[in-house]
Length: 437
Image (cartoon, rainbow, N blue to C red; front, side, top):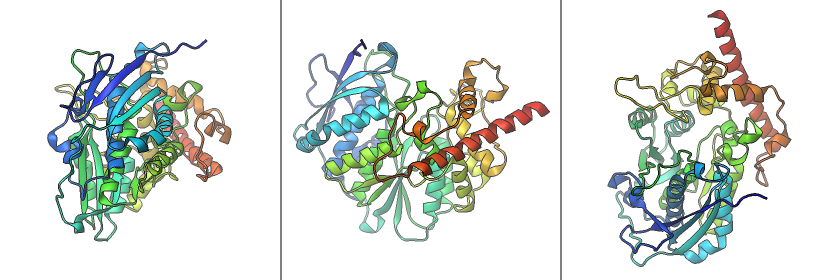
């Protein structure tokens, strides 16, 4: 018999001065985000106030992210699956009741947790419309997430270089300790722009509530937070599509072992996730669609497109931030934003090697230089074991299905095969260097 995970209960208070709940509810609010006033969603310079459904969706995502960070996985029976009860105020509760099962299923896919959601009516006077900050000629026709990583830089630089009067809006969540790097990467986009480009900058840094325990380190709901910010912006601007650029290999993110299946491998841009998210938007009455414009490319192909189509330089590609676990910054240490050993770093290394023939990024460590049993080489060993086995369409849909109507199953397998070939080339290159050393 499987044990039932203990439940955490959170009540999202909006606005922050609204009445607080009684126990056992733990209050959360926008004040739990460590952010300047100009990074709050209601202070963003958008063309028009977002429609209520889009405002509600992003508020729900912010509440989900806070509840996620305030619930430690290591306190539950299997060290992973949590049961989280969350109450969030929404402007249109009737609409949300219809889509609540779809929302809880989407969160289960993304986080592997059991969510019980209460979508209550918002307190009167809580919603305040945004003032218009510019004229209709600056309305964004295109909206895309921009993290400062290789994929988002490649897409943003390509779109910024399109000669048109239509504005491109980039939605960014600041990476604590690496905002200077994000600004530097953004300059690579600005240098190539042949159209107006605007940026929204938001916060994802959470502060602890009172004297509670340390925050959860995993961030499986972060992709939901990012996507809903882009959706909200697109809805306010009247843009039809919110782009979430992620190379097709990492969008699928095939698990390297059975233990990494489902949400243990991030699924925030998986085709099934985007399909469910689009169903959720439609169920709320929205007309925005979420799309991944890089779904057909591997990391190496994204890098080649950045060089040949966007005109980016190898140095500009190297300046991007792709690490899943950036090294801590200590006084006097070199500023190294990449650990070099996490799975995103390995895929980055393989992609740059495929596109450039070398990778000049300074990394904190090389996994092939570590002792065979070293803890930090765990992903390197897992990749090598995974590449020894064939990958089939059955593996592809074993833990997360593809949505009806596409993408084509065989084509996705071919994308994974091309990504595997890039990783295999990285292993061979490392083996050659080790032999010649």
